[in-house]
Length: 282
Length: 282
Image (tube, rainbow over all chains, first blue to last red; front, side, top):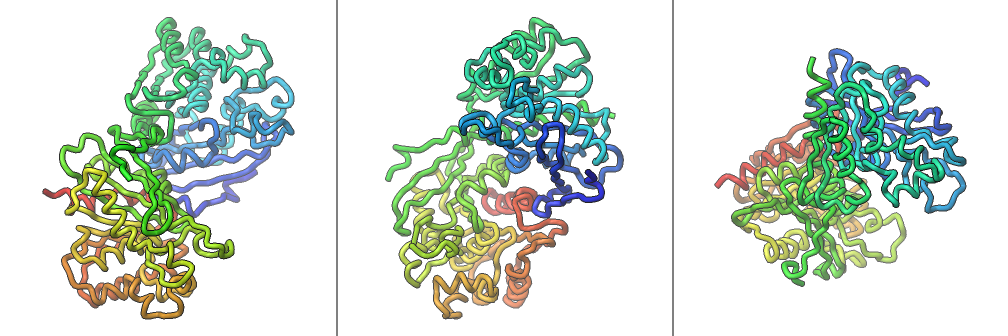
């Protein structure tokens, strides 16, 4: 795999300040070719900070880059942005209503068959993908942050909580915060982990925050007051757990906003200002 | 039809400053139910200016509102924005490769059967739709402007040129400017008009500009230097015709940009600044 020597430039994706996108497909630890999108601001004079964005259910690597309008801020701050697809698009031969058909993964490492072969998204996002990015783009590996929406917000939070000091900041829009206590999400996690609640809790931000030891996480969260998925997100439990553990988090509930992409495109600016404070301060 | 009494609010479309969208389906002069999207900024204290946006081929009323990021500027300036679908989605019983299947209309009034029954988009956009908007939204009917992308840029330009004084300003991103001279577009126009070049020229900005008499048009145009459709757009012919007719136009060719939505989302800000000069100056 050499992206430097054989980059795929997408001319339709050129953008403000002539930043460009690349896209690639390579075999990886998921045993499946994965797609991701990378935004590289033009005229970077030195290794740039990098921000990973994890998408929500039913999204692909394209959704965030087409609908959020983040490019204005990534260009402004000179941040390289990486947007992976949300799960392997593999056909496991299970029926149409099951997970892979719905674009889920919860960014965990599955242990149960048939999921365990391909659904290792946590390791992909935290290990393999960053190493591909560091090899192929001019990133400063000491300046990385992570964010996400919904299921991807959960992915961002657990990634930060399970890797103290790895990310300078973490943010989430309408994140799933306490999946092991959500009956709807438990159904999905049981596919990956079976009925073992203790294992589920190892992938649950609200549980992880209780035991977190490490540097400041620099958490920013927005949730729409009118989010129809509010009950499944479990933000109140996460807030309680943060308070109990003495972990600071900026939590913002926004009246009139729901779970959708207009909510994201409205608050994306604030998330970039947040990450820039920790990524661009040198 | 009463939208005031029976508005369709789309909770997923709430946005910055809690502006909201409405959507409706009504029978109309196109003999077909049409969809359109309307953005209404919050807290309007008086009748607001209105900007019509006409989409390009393959777009719907959703494309611009989801991908352009215009909301930031419409909210900033307090402009109501109307985004109609680009053509009636009617099945005319012609084969799959023909116009209606491809989301075209060129915003003209067709005279040939079977198109003439439904494809009256020029009258829809210039008469019926504005009257629906004026009846149902708090718009200032003396303050309206129009813009569009590609085929919709053509629609915006002919609408302004055929209605002197109706629009305070007109702008276009990568507009089709001289369709009667583009072999590829002639094929489509022949469906609507037959082989009569004279009729086609009545729907061609470059031809219309030669005879324009009326107040300043306040034209702003952007085109990507790397637009693969450049030869079909005919911008140079339009520029020549403007010069010959003594009509001012701000034309901007942007290196590195193509015909796509990242081009639009990059320059949309400048188009709102432009229209605001003429819509929001009192």
